[in-house]
Length: 112
Image (cartoon, helix red, strand yellow):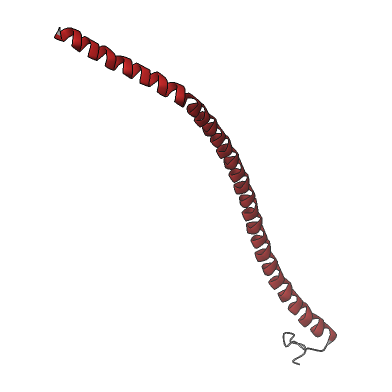
């Protein structure tokens, strides 16, 4: 008799477990579907944001390259302007010497 009572209790617990699982599954199925849809949307949005971040990084890299190139052009312009200034000073001295405004003591004939 104890075995029959024990078997009834075990089968009733198994039945309650199965009933609870089916009830949980039927109630939670829409929630799981909603959760899957939300997860998929989140993944799509994350991919779009990642693509936009990569595009922005590409633009920033292009701007950085342009800035570096502009700096190099500035350094070259500065060096060339210094050379141009030196050439202008030399040309001015040469023009003055040729015109006779400024005498150079380089020639030995002028000392005699």
